[in-house]
Image 1 (cartoon, rainbow, N blue to C red):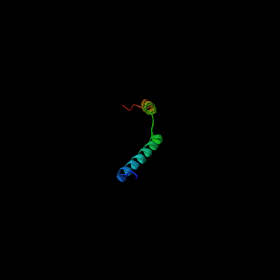
Image 2 (cartoon, rainbow, N blue to C red):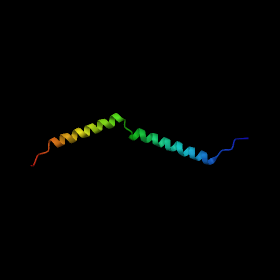
Image 3 (spheres, rainbow, N blue to C red):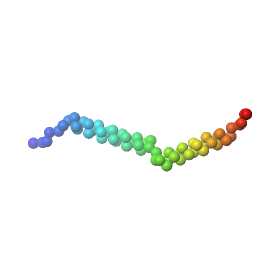
Image 4 (tube, rainbow, N blue to C red):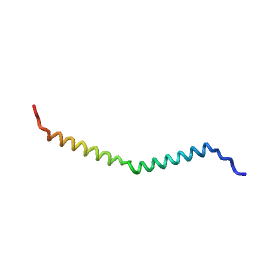
Amino acid sequence: MAEPVNLNRFRKEKARAEKKARADQNAAKFGRSKAEKSLEKAKAEQEATRLENHKRDDT
């Protein structure tokens, strides 16, 4: 005879697998490496500094 299957466990494992697949898709779609994040931050700081240096002093 076949081994009985716990349907609750099966349902939860299926939900976990679907959630993991969705997370992997989002990581591929939105994820960025640490190098990319730091490069973007450095460029933003450089642009902010450049803009600040071009402001007029009204003292």
